[in-house]
Image 1 (cartoon, one colour):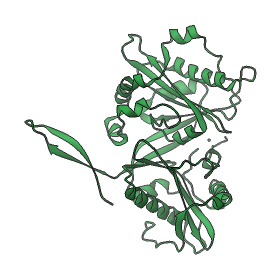
Image 2: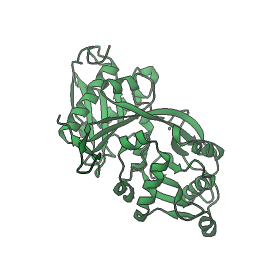
Image 3: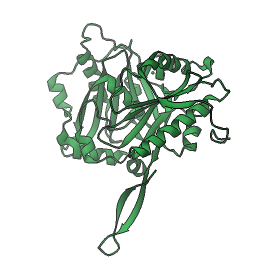
Image 4: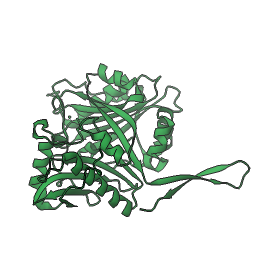
Length: 362
């Protein structure tokens, strides 16, 4: 039975207020405690797992003007919350937290969360959202809930973690960096990065994510390419990207995105590369860069450690990370819902078609 058929919960969904901060922090914490009977997206991080509460423990404090947070309130009690990050240069919305406790009137946590998701979808259609993204563990009815709401699963990611007590590699010299053909990424690399992404990403995924060259030109705190389940970590980090040129110097063989945490959170690595390329050196460079940027020249640990998401089709990057001291802590499912209708319109050439994207009305 779907949440919709089970009947609507008796409470109401409303926008969060600053006075809800304490209640939301407690709700987020309880939903990470299996004994409390709550449900969350189950994204992993210290551990054995690094939960949403530890990742996003400031549900209002880290907010940006274009982000949204809604709560489910019943009899003056906050029993559910959904938090959405909106990308300011794309019409993409990402659900980064979805928590629910059993309601006072007996409505289950799944029913509350389904209602919150439906509210986000209605808001998104009113505001012209083109895509809704979410990543979650396949537990607690998470995947079923989103599929009932019209989401489609399009991939999985392994989340790997390197313990903070493990020593980081020594900093690389400039000569070693140059010999490995590693350069800091700039907007001028956008075309080459798009080509690399196209070569390593299956066509159905490329179509759904819909990246364009201008997306690769944007660097900094709002940089969400390549997308990952843990991209929300980047708002708590100083981000840099590096490319590794192929031996022939014509194309790129690898890319690494490094997020050095400003908070009590893990650092972040996202690696992308050609399957035939050996990216072990690029990963070692990324870990060494974290050490250099955090000033840990005497104490060589990395605080809460380093976390790295790897999609299942990106092997053997996962094996290179394991060789560098990472271990898998979770597998998460990637889901997306489009509000675009793709149609084909005959072009003014024989047997030609071109693709159009037409926004569907709410």
